[in-house]
Structures are given as structure tokens and as C-alpha cells.
Amino acid sequence: MKLALARGLFFIGSLAVASLAVAAWHEPTPGVISAKSGLDHCPLPPNARGSAQVRPDQDLMLLLFGLSQGLKAAN
Image (tube, rainbow, N blue to C red; front, side, top):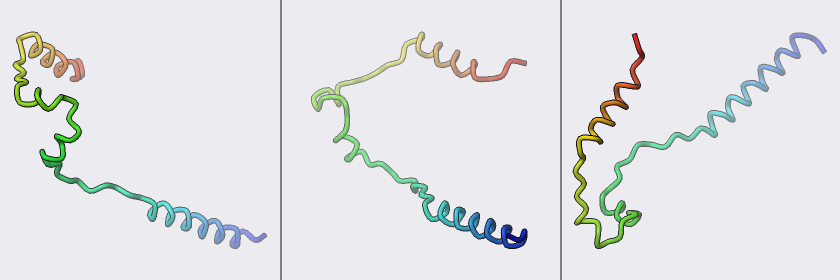
């Protein structure tokens, strides 16, 4: 087989693979999730949804601060 023919077949094959990859590529579009549809999948029981009030204490704030500072590179 001549080198030019082998190059041509390889080029056509690579274009076919690239075309199949582009055709199969699917990236979902961003969407807005409404609050109505979110309540259907809520892990809390219906009677506890409105009464749950969470107030962070000082330990939680300190933990969040420490975690955010730990992500930075040490100089």
C-alpha cells in the first residue's frame, strides 16, 4: 500500500471518528429550577418544612472560615 493512500485512509478515518464524537456530544443547557417542583423531592416531611429554622453558631462559622483558608496555597 502506498504511503499517500495510507495517509488518506487514516485522514478519512480520523475525520469519521471526530464527526461521530461531535454528533454524540450533548451538553445540557442551564435551566431554572422552580420552588414548586423542588418540594416534590424534599427529604423533609411536609409538616416540618415551614418550621425548620437553622441558625449557625460560632463553631460552624469558625469551621467555614478554617475550610476556606485551608484551600489557599501556603506562601
